Length: 267
Image 1 (cartoon, one colour):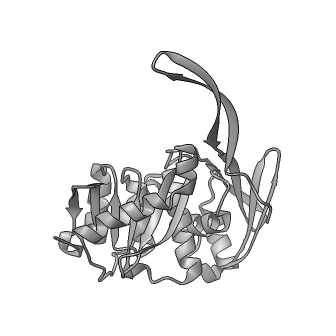
Image 2: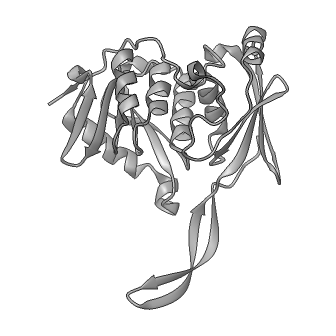
């Protein structure tokens, strides 16, 4: 695959205490990323152009295009001045299903339902999760500190979300970043599935709010705990409840709130 820049350096005028000064600043890149399945364009998302193999697999799984990583046969990534193209070769059965419900959606940062045609497409409820994962409050809070230390693009630009994997031993073992919170979680899920990680044994932690789409993606990946630094939505709480997912929000230095299935998070 080609190497793509994840940030750019731009001139900026900074104002500090009544004074202005010219300087250079790092800003995060976002690019149109087109996903094509067996030669047919399906989606164009705006994303940070890193970890794109993870993104392609994670998106395909959480959108229900693929049921398992083994149904993805090949993934080729190329780019030009117009953006980035990801060409995926998938199983014939899955491609037939995709053509049946094919839609063209234009994804934007923070946009979760662009291009959806019907209500069942909009609100997909995953099967119930089966997870025995459990963590203490101290471990959960320490994980957010670990994630922050590994957010290298955020440290450089201040513009990206992160999704990280809290393993059963209490260590953050994977971090993925993107300008879009959905994309960051898709990248994380793709990385987990590519590595063969047991998603029922840990937790996903995110730097964003917990919207319905974040809960849907986590539950569809078999993740039993989703913890967010900000608030959930009411729909996210309802879907987390019916899918058996433990949903925590407002995870900060001195506390957090657990909205559903609190048995997995102990004092």
